[in-house]
Every structure is written in C-alpha cells, then in structure tokens.
Amino acid sequence: MTKRGIDLIQGTLEFLILQTLSSGEPRHGFGVLRWIRDATGGALSIEEGALYPALHRIERRGWVESEWGLSEKNRKARYYTLTTAGREHLAREETGWREYVRTVNRIIDLAGSG
Image (cartoon, rainbow, N blue to C red; front, side, top):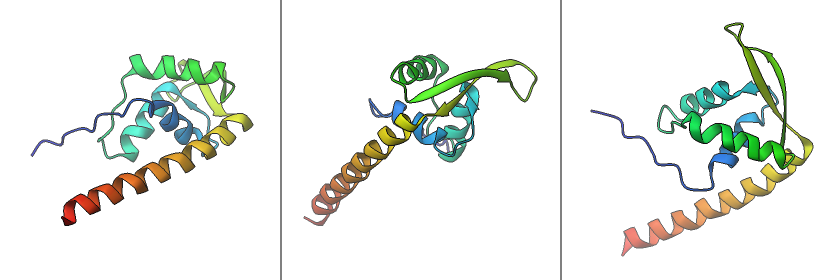
C-alpha cells in the first residue's frame, strides 16, 4: 500500500521550522527538511522552494539567526538557530496549535457520535 502524504495546512510551515529548531541544535535547510520528514515518518515532506523563503522570512522577523558553516558533506551551508524572540513566539504559537487541535478533535468526536 502506498503511503499518502499529508497536505501542509497554510500557515504551519513557519511553526514547523521553529519547532524543528527548538532543540537548540543548529540545522541547515536540508537538515530542517530531513528532520520534519523523519519525525513524521514521511507523512510531511516540505519542498525546498517553500522552505527557504520561509527561513528568510522568519530570520527577517528575528525569530532565527544564521551563520555559515560546513555540512556533513563538507559543503558550505547556512545553519539556523532559534533566537530568544523565536522561542517566545514559538511558545505562543504552540499554545494556539494545541487549542486548535483540541477544538477540532471535539468537533470530530461530536460529529462521530451523532
């Protein structure tokens, strides 16, 4: 059976990137993509064409900072880390997402019981 991927809900990419960087381990763009893919068992696969504009957006907002380094394959790569402002923003977003999921689950449960 072929595993069907999950479509990314608009507005979630920045949250997922921040969540990926919340461990404190600097990651380059491909590392972010790989972490999200692996953490979701391949259910979410982000395209590079969406990732890098999002990384640049959140860097302009001050939620991440970056510096150049060498990748595992000895290639030049930009590594991203979460800033204090990014951690604060992520905490607010996480609270909102948890409430959203609880609310949607209530609707699913109520509709399924009727």
